[in-house]
Image 1 (cartoon, rainbow, N blue to C red):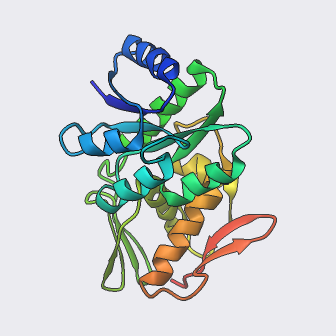
Image 2 (cartoon, rainbow, N blue to C red):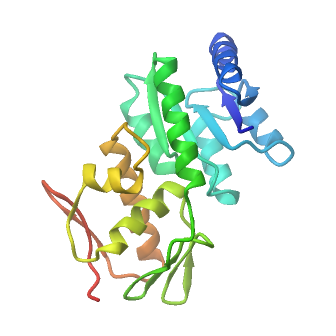
Length: 228
């Protein structure tokens, strides 16, 4: 039974989502703010967070930053109002995996949850290691290394980088890259791809990779600029 944590200051939303998730067979924990969710993290870690952005006593962005310092694997779906475009981008760049705008369809949210959980469960699966020049990816151990420096990625970042590393030097469109990395997710979120790519690029460069090793090909998509 997968465990979902709902972190939102709206009591009615927590209650409605908890009911819907319980009917789908999930175990549910609810928290009215990020601080309460953080206090419970080590004793009661979930398989996925549904995380509001604007909350008292630690908002969703701060909670995400704290979580990603200790845990890069647990997926986060941000819940945000439709007019909070900047907050959605910040949520993805902080370490979120996806977002859905309020008000939202519960059916759509359930589909996104299932897709993100399948994405998390799909890491590894006996796939062979990937090597692209100094970059090495091991799906079984979920580790990435640039030369001798180990890199820490979220699940979404890892899947996207793996797809780019399978065909270095080849331009991949945002939509094709998303579909290849997340074949079970029918919600193609190009903004999420852009935010994930930005974080991947920053982490590669901090590990010593050349600047813009992950190239943006304007009007097309992205390319991992490694000669093999």
